[in-house]
Length: 419
Image: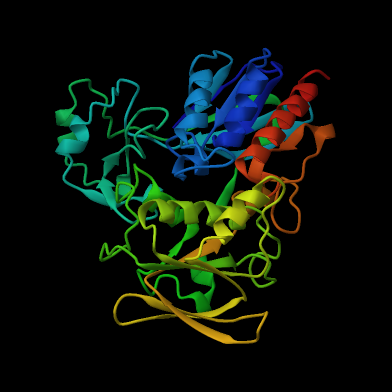
């Protein structure tokens, strides 16, 4: 284990999290002359946006925004980027923080050209977390086709150290003896852009997630619809690859519930509307049922919602889902009460999508690092101390909002370096 240290007193900015918010903060701060250290716990940058099929407002693929930011990061010498890296501790005072970080071994060095010879040679497989375990990769892998940095990584728990990947690599890029690295950075301010995780759907016993292949989450739906997803963009039921003829969306799955997430996650209604368009592109006559408490599609998105609600084959039912029952034929029955009529509904469908909420990713680790969190686990900024929250680390938000508040976070972090 090695140790390295940045130059003290340089007034640098540490950005924790390499999703769309962290990337935006980093490039905005660096392009006006600030030293930026960008750290990400995954082997790649891009965060949750990289897992989407499309995002608002233009229904762009992730490449639309991420590719530009990746180029800006790559071309800016003011940004030093660290993947597979997490904050271990923070000490010091405002304007002069000492942050200790740990980088996990990738087992692949900078000689990697992304030629894929190692993957072809590897005999072991692992569940693909990027696709929410709906398919597998080799033990040596890259998360997706536009992964940045474009380097492979070895999932060591899945690796037997047989050495076949190393033998296949003519660039000597595989290093099975690579170790963790600990280092310390001296920075003036810290921006937390640690993003969000999908709420754990297994915690909602009545919705039966994990008990049927016909029950998936909204993020799994994004991966199914994505051209680089487990089915090549075909929306098929996991397990049997059946083409569904009917769908049910279960809104507020865990959100606005004091037993789970007590807040509205903001994006779930719009995500469902977007995913209805995915279904319509592939299955023009499929029946779609949307069970909701309220539909929240703010501002300009109202017209988008109205257009979808006019679809004769899409039924919107105001009522909270009480239960989902797996059926013998592989489908499920969704049970709810229509709040408008009092009628009890039992709707059989081929695939149910749970619109799970956004849980702040830093929640478990933040308190131990001395980060101030609100009652829901979101980071609270303290601009006087140079501690800034950005994107979904600050609040549940869509991509546009994250871009706006991340630019603001960069400005606040820069101000802390000028004191």
